[in-house]
Length: 250
Image (tube, rainbow, N blue to C red; front, side, top):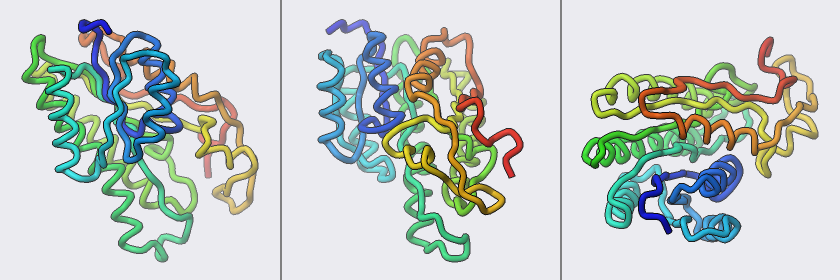
């Protein structure tokens, strides 16, 4: 293992977009901390990578104590962090907004927004204190950072909030040589999104099949953002299946 390889942290690394991004970073030579709540998927990603640069660490990003322990582990093992991909997130049941329970709302806010904030805090503290100073944070915003799907208030609200978090990190952390950008992803084919290929509720109330893109395209886009010099930043990138109903949605 090359001790000079850059160090990345990917949250929600066990499945879907997080898994694809983690594998792309590993293939590109990064040392990658794979984080999620379940160890089995993390170990599977590490095994699939075929390298000794994958490091599974279980953590619940919605809990401050768990995040603190995660970053203490990164500090102890590597002494630095060059990239955070803030990707962990969940959705709520697809019900009318007035029928969402407080617990359902809180679960989404805790995972999607608070989790991203806590991980960003941990990354910033490490990046500002390390030598050389600086690093990069990439937040997963989603198409829902721009336009909602029906019955998605908790998810959409948190993803709009991620945009504000991205802008604040970019502004407040320039002085530490920390770049922060956001990738907004639409219809990447993963085990979680496969249902869209069979039909999903549209704004006018009908069910329609939606085009999907290969999740590898998303991983390649994140890798491009990650490998730019810190003097250059992709502030916002939207990557989507070309024919998905986004432009003109509703």
